[in-house]
Length: 387
Image 1 (cartoon, rainbow, N blue to C red):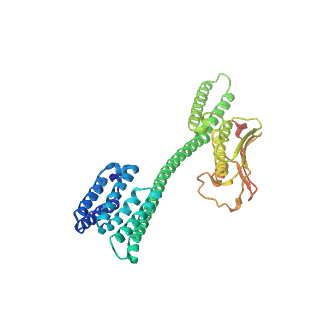
Image 2 (image 1 turned 45 degrees about the vertical axis):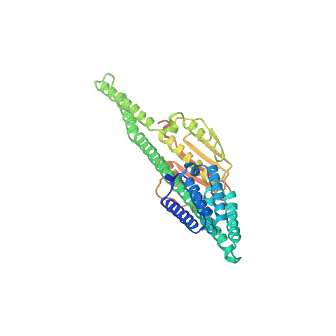
Image 3 (image 1 turned 90 degrees about the vertical axis):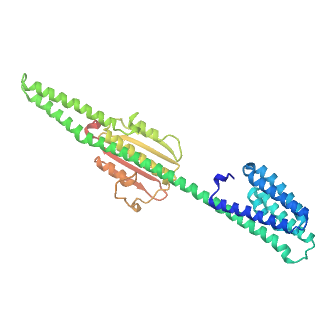
């Protein structure tokens, strides 16, 4: 492990392990009562220090395994020289569990415990339960400590990933809400311009045309009225350009039918089919926006909640109205059990109903548990469908 990646707790544990190893090696060297034991204790300490210093041991599992093998051989030689080396088994447990994969670390701990017991018996110690319990209990404590820490570390990493994903999701949601707010404001402005300014200019133009017809031929006022009517017509065209500029991106590159057909492109969720009935007519921008948003909302509900295999979007042009139907074969629900949000926001049923009513239309939902869902909206055509 890269030392720069160590947490303060890991740094403290690593320092404690170094101090424990150094203390036990000094104890083994002092109590060896032989030159060979002292020399082997120094050699073992040198091998340990080399592994702690070499970066390759921390970065490469193969290098770590080789270093542990050399350290284990020097420790076995020290065990042969003095029984005091038995206590070095405890820090060795932690090294093996930390540096080796699980399939090798646990057998290595068992072999180390066995070597410690055999060396103690080989140096003439009397057989008693403590000879076996000490090394085995030490190994069990080391295994439980390391495995417990690894489990906590994995849980900490999982929580950290969840926090990062939550932060990312919140940022994406905030961006989506800002984008939705921008689109909603653009739609509101387009509707206001169309329903107030554009309709007012259109009425002014019609009134001026009627006044022009009522004047006697050659009247001096006819020229002024004609210029006023032309100015009204030019400003009406400009207002309609503003409305088109504020049109949602889905409608910028084509008609409402084309935008609805793009909603049916293959993707996650049910197979969706789109059809048009009747003779298409040009719709005012607010109508197209409302129908597109309602279709998006209804289809979004189908994908998220219905568990449907098929869905169908139908756009119907009638003599005095335009209708949109979104039908699916999903699990359905009880419309009476859906509590309205009361804020008219979002893409829920209240928002769809509000859109339809704002244009003088009707909105209905037919559904029942296990019987699919049908959403229908009908908007009256103003002036034969022309803005």
